[in-house]
Length: 220
Image (tube, rainbow, N blue to C red; front, side, top):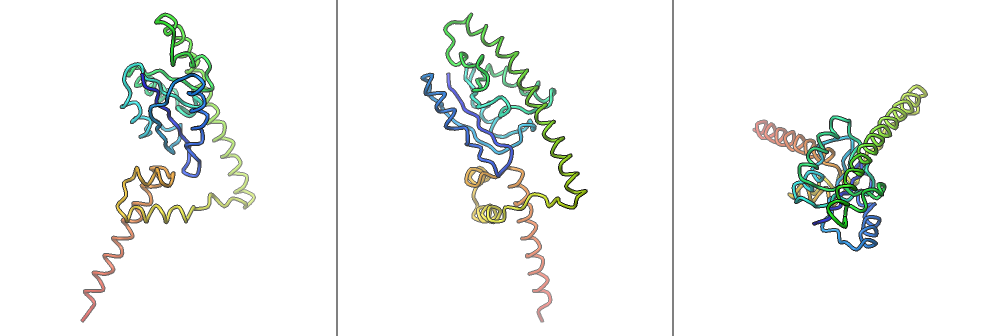
C-alpha cells in the first residue's frame, strides 16, 4: 500500500502546497509515510486535472489518496463526481481526508470485515461532503457574480490585476525551452495560464518574423 497525497489550489496565485504540513503531521501521528505528492493549481470544479489523473494512473489496488479536505478533491457537478468516483473505485483506491474522520481508519484497517465496514460508511459520507462542496462552490460563485454586478453598476469594478513579473518569468522559461511541468512547478501557474502565455508568445514571434520578412523585401 502506498499513500499518495493530492494538494490543490484553485488559482495560480494560491499556494497549492499550503496543506503539506498538515498532511505530513497527520501521517506522522498515524505512523505511515507519504510515498509521493501531486500538486497542481486547477479548479476543483473541473474534472480534467492532470496531476490528479497522474496520481490515479500511478495507483495500485489498495493505495490511499490523501487530501486535506474533500473539496480539494472535488467541487464537481453530480455527473462529473460520478465519473471521478467510478475511476477511483475501478482502481480500488481508498480516499482519506483530514475533514472526514470516518476515512482515517482506511489507512490501516485491522481486518477485512472492519475495512469493508469503514469503506461503506466512508463512501456515503464522501458523497455527502462532495455534494456540500459543490453547493458551497455554486453559492460562492453566485455571491461573487452579484458583488461584481453591483461594483460594475457603481463604476467600481476594475478586475483582477495581471501579475506581470510572474508572466515575464513564465515567458522567459518558455524561451529557454523549459518543460511545462518545470514551469508550473517553478512558478505555481496553472496550465490554462501557461497555455495562454505560450500562445501569445508564439503569436508575437510570428508577427516579428513577418515584419522582418517585409523589411527584407523592402530593402533596395
